Image (cartoon, rainbow, N blue to C red; front, side, top):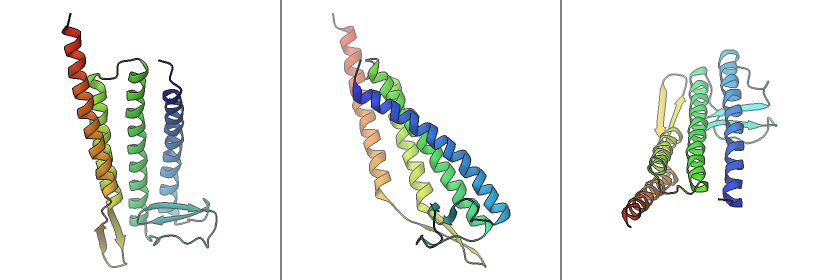
Amino acid sequence: MDNPILYLATVVGKGLVYLLSASMFFLVFVTIYVAITGDMETFWYIHFTEKGIFFTNSLYQEVPRVVSGQGEILFSGLSAVLGMGCYILIIRESLKVVRSIKSLETFRIDNIRSFQRIGKLILVLLVLNAVILTHNGHHWDWYFEFNPTYLLGTLVCYILAEIFREGNKLMEEQKLTI
């Protein structure tokens, strides 16, 4: 099937996977470097915040509360790396669905599983972005910040999985019809 939108989705998806993969490796290096040395200004002005990592080219840029201490830096870095990993897996699963649509095998079982995996990965993103760890010098605190957008995304993925399941049933019934 020669569809320009599917072609564009494939090109953009592959580009994002490469970009996120390179960013993830860079982020691992930066997180380890900053956690060991404490030097956050070598790599453009990096601010480890409770929501992840914030890059800026100015020390005077207003950023959310900046974390301090190696534990918080490692937690923020790990959370950001795991989040990028989830996004890479979501894009890969989406590319599998696009490839099957391009090959006119839209309602196959693998697409149902892909949508279910994407839904589960979005739930992981909910947890990664919801749990925030801080240290006030004496003890560790954590709090939970709920964002319903992730639940909505998960719901949409599971609804699409069920739509594709019905399409698969109809496709199988059509194969049996003479």
